[in-house]
Length: 232
Image (cartoon, rainbow, N blue to C red; front, top):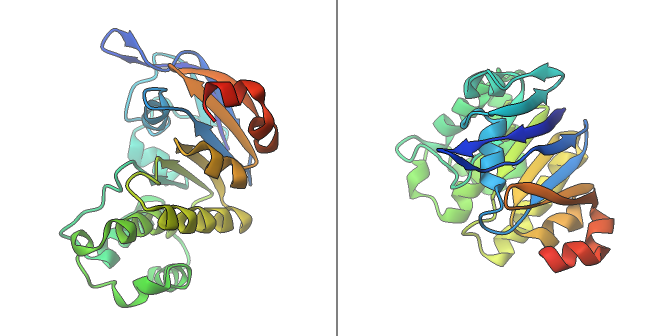
């Protein structure tokens, strides 16, 4: 579904990602983990065409995409959850969700998909006409996730979704994410909360200073002395 092969990026003249190789197969739940400054958000920006890849290749669903624009990548059937939610605060919840539906060329009818999102997030059913900017931080996080899901993408890529959430909301958010994957959506989760992610993911990668320093099954990484020394 997604493959980075020796991908490098720079910020000005400063190297950010350094020959990163990572893959996610169909149906997998894979997490990319690391502390602040590890290059996690740069990875999200690289795979969504928000920063230029200076070397290496990026393939999504069998197609090299490093020269595409962000909207073209979304149109392949990729749902995106950027860091900080990035909702349109003046628009209603429904209007924000419609943007996500249109971005991936949603199918099945918008009203049906809105009903599906209300089944997944029951509180949303009576809030579709409310301005997104008036929601709580936790509610906005759920709307951002629903916006990524409403077009029935084959793959979702999430950048630090737990930032700013309470422990209770983090637990709820990750349970929903796990259920989404169980229903067949492939997930690449870029996150700092390593222990929580490894409880629900199939595999993981650890980044330090823009490099992959450890990779393996979630169970192996949880038990790895090297992974614990580096981050856990």
